[in-house]
Length: 119
Image (cartoon, rainbow, N blue to C red; front, side):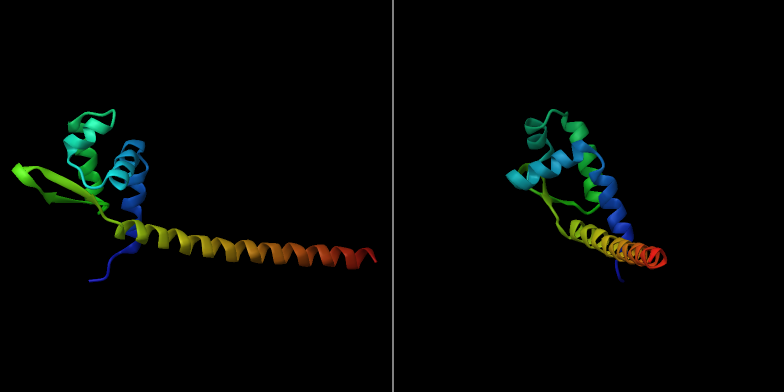
């Protein structure tokens, strides 16, 4: 079953909209896999709040939960959803670039037509 790239991108954008979730992702990127308790020790937020943010990040596919020792769950980054969001943005940028180029061409032709009328 093919993935719905727009839906994946939307979930990533929703997850990244919150500065706390961005902080969690940045911490995981810098320090590697961690538990909610580890993250709470590194960030100015409670473990319970971290757990709620991790659930949303997991739902978006940006982190995955891995069982660890003594029933502790460690969270690891997943880059695939981020790549889908990047591709989505790149496609939008290409569409905008084409439209802006067409507008610039049109304005240049208009400018040339005005010069011809003045001559």
